Length: 426
Image 1 (cartoon, rainbow, N blue to C red):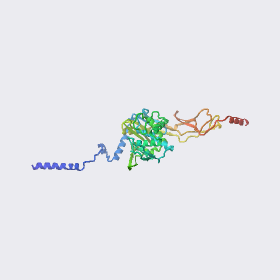
Image 2 (cartoon, rainbow, N blue to C red):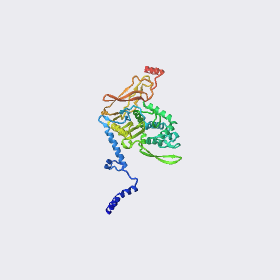
Image 3 (tube, helix red, strand yellow):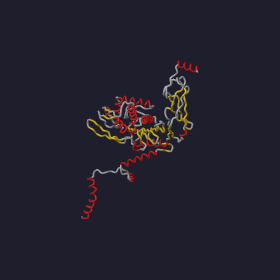
Image 4 (cartoon, rainbow, N blue to C red):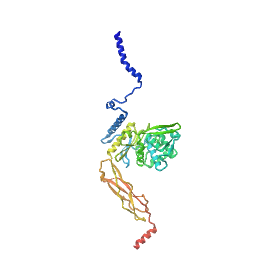
């Protein structure tokens, strides 16, 4: 009997420590790392983030093949920003819902208004009931809440705030409908042939559609015309202050574009995701003197979106070789007919840039100036009177307009008689 009691006592003592721990620490730390992570010594969240970044980079590298690249998303395009040259495209003209990538156009119109002096960064914007009612991604602006234009741009660029978009649309145009009309007009002006906007924030609604190519076009316009957008869309985390009738509180913005942390060359620009659009991004990246725009539409998940964007950018940086004309040769005055002057001064509109993906020797690029035949007055300053054409291995690769740099009036009948008489007397 004593031996049986001894065995039972021994068993109870073995169980007791486990039971005590369960009672004292009902909430226990759970190591969410998988076994391979543990073996690699990944002990902190930061280290896990680094490892995830490396995994995405590795998967993107695997997407590159000998013949080109593999992009999982159904629609994509890669464009060089300074020239607009398309390096890669996949079903780039099929209209699809863009989700919050719509906000690229919203931001473009905001910066247009800033440039025109209609609004200023320090202007105060009051949130309407309608703006505050927006669902989806938001910064929870309250009716009557006042924020500066600068703060609302941050809310749109970093946190993809739908309420901030509508507040800015109303501030610039009085109502969202008029702002959206201007979005569609700007799209038409940019040659976005397959785009129609129904709202300023990208919430799903029938008829709100664009394409990968059109997104690239508006993204290019935004980053080349207003490069200061990068100062906003590269912010990773920042706080804003809500001041309402309820008091003052801090609200944290976190960038929705994970490329900012996961890709060393990332400079922006805008992500988007809804049930209809799936996962989209207009990703901008810069390495040395090459700046790229990679658009992904309808990716299956956020990781696929990031992986495809990195795959495109890596491909572009590996393939692109850029030629930039450093100094434009001056032109001799151009002869004209029927003008009060016999010649007009002219100049090339801008320097020429070209992106090659074939490995050609860009030092062999040749420039030839061709003037229009039979140029006659009157001529206005800025009129096109010719073109500088550029050739690589005998093939034309682009051209830049030659413009008159002054105005020349047409000769009058009286002045023609006087000129003829003067020449006769001589």
